[in-house]
Length: 286
Length: 157
Image (cartoon, rainbow over all chains, first blue to last red; front, side):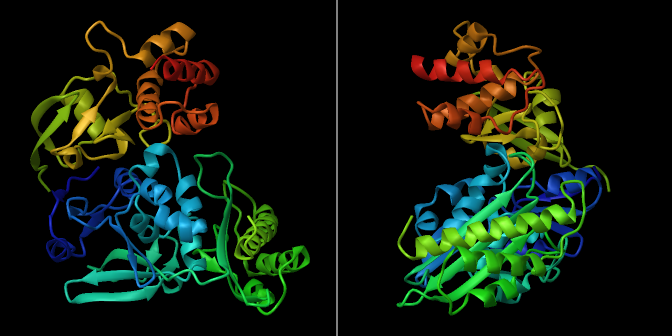
């Protein structure tokens, strides 16, 4: 590994002033350490964020939840505030990697690393979440929809740090669900899928968001699947029809984990299950 | 860039150690090479196998993916700290009794994963044990006896 300066500031403004173009922020390090070891990233300076108090806080905000970027996967999976409202996110945090990984990996790192297969990205897309980004001049909010530009590439600017994730309040008669397909428990997802649905008072789907992971250069929204659902009554036929549309929205590739054909088939299966699960729970069934 | 050295103090198995390390030093190499605590093993060096699992401030982690500097001011538990003198930890006794170690290479990390599990969940189900050691590979595939050893250690305490 190439030598670097290690800095562990205790204040956010200090950390932001240290994030020069040759510096990288360090959260859990489960991705960054290996990238540095393999010399895929060769920073002059590593800015460890873990000494900054409060950056890992999970708190209620505007009826929803604000999750500090340094919140551990393990804490997300154990948080009743998350589990009570955002089932898809709680489930995704529970299945990321091993105990060791969940004790180190953070939600902010999972997003900023911008893997197309990031397990927390699809739930956050489905939940309509935003990220808060800070630099020396201030903070801005950006929908997670606009965060991912390509594998390993985000809309964060040089010197800008992802500081928090903001999830809106869960409306009445709404629920989310997460589905994932892996080769082994430790491997990254072959496909993952998250669904959010809100039912109208008469039981029709009023709002729907479907997100797919590992089937394109970024985690993506399945727009045509979503439009099939809105205004219609939940049921197995509708879920299957939307899942078929989701398979058209996916742009999978062949790689070491799975072929594109298999991924497309898994999109059909996982999307159907996620929609059925979310609709049942939104309707008060479990 | 010249390799700058960072002064760190890490408490390992209750004893504070002050060392100067390069920023690139992993916690695993710090334990093994700087402190001579070779119980913790290096397997894949990619956070997949769990041979280097230690407990950092109460949380199970893979020491191969952590810079030693990140552990400054923190506490680490390694396999060397499990026994109290000649008095073995219940997991060490049940591992020995059930034959849960074959080649033994995964054993230190496996013991720390199992200790971390029992610290949080003193009476786990079999499924919870399987889930708890999902990040620890045993190439001898001795999982059956390892799970049995954890279940028996849980009964003892």
